[in-house]
Length: 438
Image 1 (tube, rainbow, N blue to C red):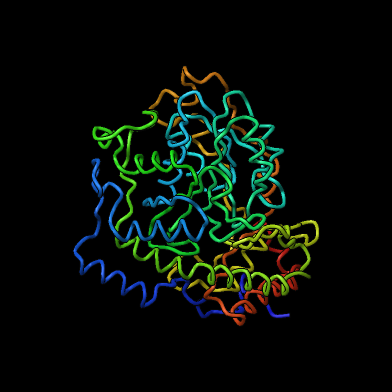
Image 2: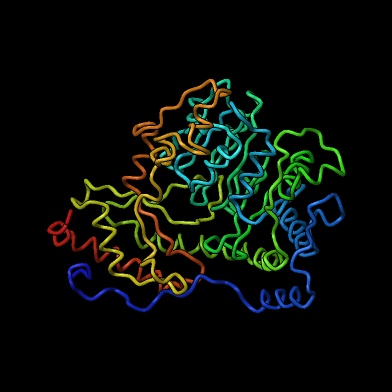
């Protein structure tokens, strides 16, 4: 057995993994066309034909709606902006509750707070890491207005049961699809299963335009409200009517022409890029399946996972070594990825801390200093955000290993190096035990 790199041995690999940047000549050509046109944005924040943006924005929206089998697509400047717009379009406001997962990027939760509503956290299913119909039912109250369903890591949630609850209680369902483009549930694309779906075009996602996002909906009214919230609704409504003035305080969530032009080309590549992720996961899983202490993901046959990350459970009782020590040892064997310098090998533990343990929620301080929306006079509920609220989330945070070394830029040779690093650590557990906890 060779000595672990963590203990002074030679790492499995020192050469950087190839960059995950998929920008090519087609994107460069489109950007130059936009620059040559001189029109980098054509939005006007008044009621005018340019209220809807320029030609690249509209072309991107048309393409995305077609590809996701949605009636409408509304581009925005980030997925965070898209979540805020979707919550606003849903009519969420003071006194309302929004059910959401605490095992997600924080914007999934703060979107509710932006409209003075209170997040109510539902636990996740221990296999999919998504909130489930069962945990949603436990979180329901008469104050529930909406559910934000996060298709975390690229795995779709159990949408049939969730939509049944929504119909029973007249709730709006917003899908957070930031990590799940091209994922499907029973043959249907995510983002079209609820009332609105929000996607990301951030640099770290499956495809990107630097920053950006897009919202899908099949509802004309939601589309109208999303477009208004995106582009200065309060000013635009001097020139036209709307079905309700609720949440018609607009923002500037507009996507630029350059980003939209890049997004069109990137979206053309998305199916193959996600297919490569799936092939990489299948290849690597075969290499890792017999390592003691690792539990590979279980994916139902009626969903297509898009693998933003490859997530494994770690069983310490089978190794005698803590998860954190195991991960440190594997990271020491592997290099960084080009264009991600400074992050180390892209392997982590736990994903995010349960959001209800963040200071904002523990102290119930958000906008201003008087504990709104948590202690708002319009809010008749009470939340006590504390450890133990969502045991499945806390168990996942304590036992999960996440990694991004399944990106399309990685070859089978690269994946072999990843597998070798895991096997090397598994074969040197006795050495690792000696430094565990240090």
